Length: 380
Image (tube, rainbow, N blue to C red; front, side, top):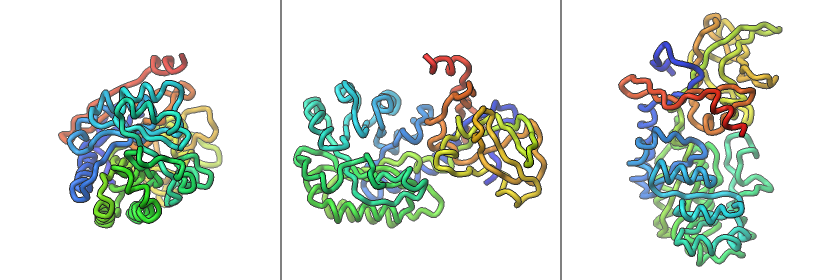
């Protein structure tokens, strides 16, 4: 991947959305929608940048949320259909959600008993999340597998008989994480084979997110064919709700080397942090790609890259570079739209990165910058 043409004087750290790349990814989404005849939603839990929502509105059908605030964001900023799911809802939450969301999904027979009357009385569509017992997560093992043993997500087949399916509008089956087409197709076939009776009683089936349709090498044809076959077999509306799958490789995190240190190894301390700005680096874990860098020992100079927080484990990873690093050098981490700025923190008072867009004409637009006031606001 080539170095993006970012202005020399930009402030770092900064999350930078590449508009041209996002548009290319949206062409993929449009093709799946068009050829399979389905609806597609943006899962704002993975990526939510209201400044970019105008680019998505003409293609996507709305947003899907994991709670009240995300639902409000979808209603206020995206302005199309709003779907929402949570494993459980707090006091008064459903009563507020019926004024915001069009479709409300419940996790269990107990949640349905407690809340369905409220949703129905408000004229909202009611969905049930099932646990299809289909494990195909390719990232992080059980940490990111919705169908891992003992998972709190969804009603199992054994428990589904407790649900009055005639009152349910949508069957929801989210079971994937960064899946290739084999996982997507496998889930569709598995649900068709194991939940046919339930499907025939609902109006729509939502196959959730985790379909990594823009990952290099993802074959769209098998997914489109599986969706077409499913629709023909059951005559229901079908929904996908990718989040990260829409923004694969659409942006960067730009950082700067603050200092160089030596303790048995060469260490570069950056103005960014795994702990605060790239939390999945520690949680998954994984080592993000840096433009111009390779694995340790491949190029002439190897460095451990660390964040500027006080946490010992705030280490991004080991990388090798063709040339020595210097204070002030800019490093560009790739694929940094998904789950980065929706999960970042101000631990240690670390400033949040700027949020910016690199437009197709080369214009660099800082959407939002943060300072002390944001750090102080979060502390009450």
